Amino acid sequence: MTRIHPAVVLVPMAAFAAAAMLTAQDLSRAPSRDRVDLAMVAKIRTEGTTRSKVLETFSYLTDVAGARPTGGRAHKQAADYVRTKLTEWGLANSHLEPFEFGRGWDLEKFSLELTAPRYFPMFGYPQAWTPSTRGVLAGAPIYVADKTEAEITALGEKLRGAIVLAAPPQTVFQLTDRLQPADTDQPVRIGGPEPPAVRQATSVVPANTMAPLLQKLGAGAILRPGTELHGTLTVGGSPQTPDGAVPTVIVMAEHYNMIVRMMPTRYAAVYAFFLESLDAASERLRNFVEKAAKATLVGDVFDDAATGQGLLNYFLRAINCGALTEEEAIHYSGLTIAELRSGSFVKILNNRQNL
View (cartoon, helix red, strand yellow):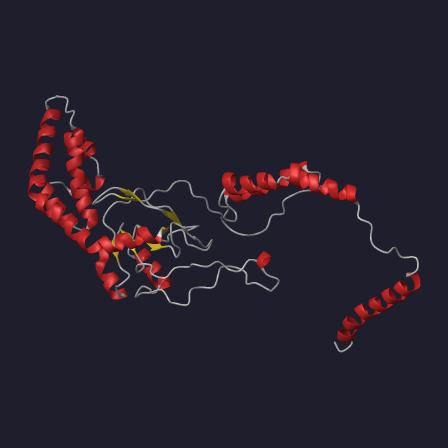
């Protein structure tokens, strides 16, 4: 080890000495300056200004392939495209080299909407490697950022299949990017930018504890706010996310904060709507099921199933938002638990006809 360090120092010194000797000996024969190959410069300039493939390549990778989580369809699509283009441009032995990574992830379909007290399309994006939801989730969200682990656990069945707001409103925003290498001759950090000096408020239960807790309780989806302003979203994810994890969506901060602000008044308004309409809806559904069953039994054509489905949906939505329990819905509607959970007025009629 003691001999290696001097050797590293001596190599450039020897090279410098040899270069110095060569310069001294050949100084009289050396040209006064390097000659510029203007023809080659012109060719390079022509390639860059008239035959450049930079914009074409950039457009394909960002606009056509889009986001490219490692191992996913878009990742392979982009890699195949680049390999093909390199071969077309004359590079020999252009090929892909596989490596061990794990499962990929692709987003097939996603939408997020506010449906009450008004319709409003919301802006969000699922975290990479998050699992799919079990069908369409609808109902009033449940805010748990201010609750302890015991309080969240006590919510029990109310969280099953629910949309959960797991973080406080976003009040601290990422306003600066990291310094780009082209903008300085000094070393720059890699990865994300420096976080803001002011700390963002966090949930009572840490995120790494809340996620498995909500999974255990059967939550349908978790919403969290983004950290940027004006619709900008930075979405990460991990290939180590377990298959049974709760689907997680990062929502534009302004939209997430709006939902949190609406929670107290929205709950009051939604609950009041369902409870004030409960008696009338109960009587209508009971009468409607009876009328429809009789029409079926005597062979009549009962063509107003959509109205019956609408009355059934009233009770399903009341359960989803927490205004009614399943037991209360069964009591008021006159349906069985199996009929209620079927979610289909037509199935209810068909099953009763076969009794």
